[in-house]
Image (tube, rainbow, N blue to C red):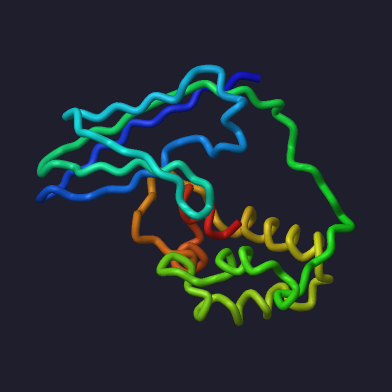
Length: 176
């Protein structure tokens, strides 16, 4: 199936502000693009791109004082199939993970591991390790937290989403 996606974002900056935008399809799906990704700004400002440590294409720019609109779109082909279910997938102990995986386990200002770890262990620590534990966590998030774009807040953390029972796309990504 073909999926056309796009965005239109307007930012208001009180002064010139350096930005890094992650708005591009990841390289592992680039071959599936059926139209080129386009990115425009108004006013027109120069941009450069680079790859971050996760392989994301990042776009750098300096937003002028006032309003800046960023928009773009593309069409991608997708088979529409659900992710593969692997019920016998095993849980790898943290001590056995490759070094380059550890960064994904670290807390951040959006995912306060110090405030959520005990709750997570209380809720899921007795679940059999592996696929079943991951599925239990996904089922909980899908049943407990409502996705609501209209209640999006750029400062919402995973801890707040847990207590408020609402999240936007960015917070949902943290939970998964």
